[in-house]
Length: 604
Image (tube, rainbow, N blue to C red; front, side, top):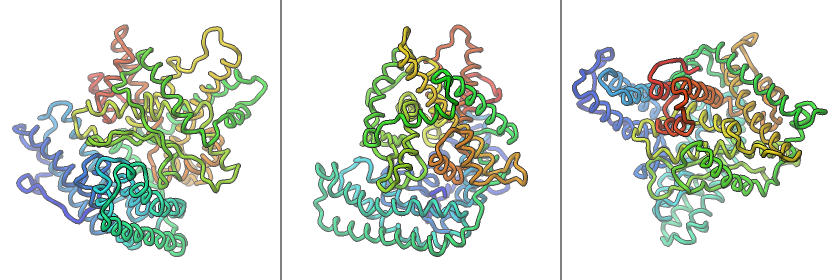
């Protein structure tokens, strides 16, 4: 579900284009002004209007008291609004726009097409029960997590949102038709965390947390109202969980798969990639096999007497204790920053470091680590949070060990690079320099996740964590284990690449189906992951169908870099390449290639 639903659609009045004008183009006179006006109206009248939670996250706090309209009628209103804007934006001749604005027009149209595909074809609002329970939890979290206003002000906004949450869960019962069993299972896995969040985390944050201590809520009436609305949300979530278990789960016999046609449309709209599925799958397997071969080569250097799988098992056991995990991540920041600056990798626009914290409850079932920066329009609370998923207290020792294998001596480094330096956090630090609102808000994951994944390999290739000249055997071993960790993370992303295509399209499979069990086995055997990771990653893939964008984006960026080297020759500068890439915001790589290379050459 897109979570961009509301009860009201505001039309553009004088800019309405009659249906007959679908194939016409507006004259070049005033095209720039018309597009700029329309794009501004799109965000205020559609994008944030139907997704006020996104408005809060972006730093636009006029939306804080609103909640998404989760009703079927709300979906119809959003579809109508999107259709109207699609006609108006399409009517503007791209030839009458400056090149960057013409690219923004294409990005905006693709976003509209993607939202319509999600609502009308994929129909997650009928198939994904977690989008309701985790959706309302996220709506509370974005108000709770940042002290962008006084505790009283934020609590008043939360109370208004909480008043609307029980109805959202009632709409879920009306809307959900025939989810896939795994979709309902994921929602049930998350529901206890959602309940606990409202029972414990939210009251603590507002009434006894660190912000509340310095900015205490003094309004007794507000406290009483909050106690009432928060209790109602807890009751509604528990009831929703019981309903899912007793009613929805037994009849969850649907299919999470998108199918080939919808999958390719989504990839085209979201990432501007139209490579045929068979070639995409070949690209995925080629990269997988390259990384497996390199893993085997480095593993032999670590211990010639062991197989790669035996070295992998040894690597999995070299990790910090769960209680030391956050501090271990923090300990990597200074060395990463120093290396980046000494080796002219990229400009880091700020000395402020991200804040490490535990992953919010509603995200723990499907993620191990993430970066949560403030929105592009946030002015009062500019902390970025590096979230890490710690083992749950009720896990078995075996489950804890499997989970912690994802944070071994090598993957700790690659995760810090990916999430912080010079990955997501540095890209966030560059975002204020991007002038286009479209490129701030409508990001392509092949850019965002592709950049972060590209950095994992690039940093080691440039010499980070390399053994020094005259290194001792232990120093050589440490450097090789770090490289193996990076390769293991690369293989994880390769396995996502393959599984995203096979799970949702069945490409290359007899009968056109690839099962959950096959996907999990592929993560273990070909992606070199633990069974616990394989289960989490497969679950994610059922609801995040195009999560191939990590490796796909990495390969696109690597090709762009090589093409820029060829074009510029001796004048090529890695730092300038990276800085110029950052200046393009979160645009698809296709758009960035045209800007930086000056042509429409293939992305891969």
